[in-house]
Length: 372
Image (cartoon, rainbow, N blue to C red; front, side, top):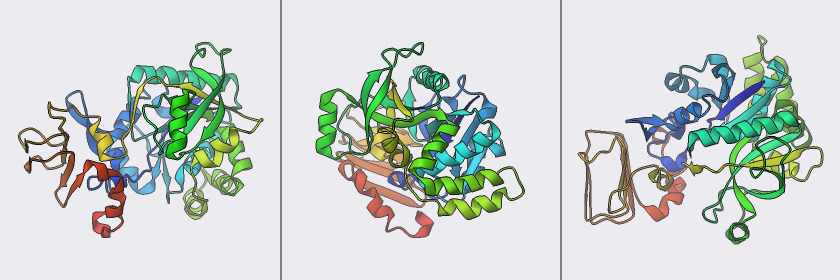
């Protein structure tokens, strides 16, 4: 049967001071939709409507986020929240989910989605995800990833080189390809060459695969993780479930699924790494400038986010600036500013040039625990 898992474990340090350890970016009400402001994880869950039944949807997140997530997504039962006792990167989040699902259903095929992306239009996304499921159901040795046409030579994304077209599966022609090469986060020179070639796409960080197949890949490519995951699987559903998870999971080697599985699998002949072209508008909301791309801009290129409104934000002779506030009673005024980002919360205010947004982690590293 078909299942889906939303990965929601990111800390979101580049969205400080709104994103905190206790309330990370995926839980923040930031995205304007239909007259209200919703969180990224609410958007991610809604994208599954009509694709996977609610009782077969899961969220893998830090155990400490269980209750906050359930408060915004009460339709997810307690058993549908896979709580990690420690953050061990994406290969273990995927492996944890695969181990649980394979025990419940040896034929499980599941999608892996992210909780920090804006993807539009949603109906096209569902169509491409549906194709991913059909590709795996036709051949369980396939590992399907989703790729996005690059708009600039990003160095923070993985790149996928398209190989031979897959046409045997209905609806796959022109959309599904074998992966010739999978490169994680290249330097700027290589990224520029990839974009110019027209043969490469960004890896969207979303996948569809058989639980059994991805576990076999972890067994071969990351056996240290596999050994621990099998212990967790054996204890799952027993009185020792929480004890074994708490003891074993924090010891698993910390590495991404891209490095641990996708790169070695792309040159392995026992599996087929495939990609589906997702012709959607895809935005990774990982920083304040990228968040600003989700908002409407005025004639001067300024935008307001969070609880900021024209009544609480005064921008005079200011251009290309972003103001975000979580306090509707607090006025933020900018005079003669260009390319500035201002983020206000009741206990912290950030002011920085837009060009320094990627350096925000330097500030985060100097904060006291109460502000992180």
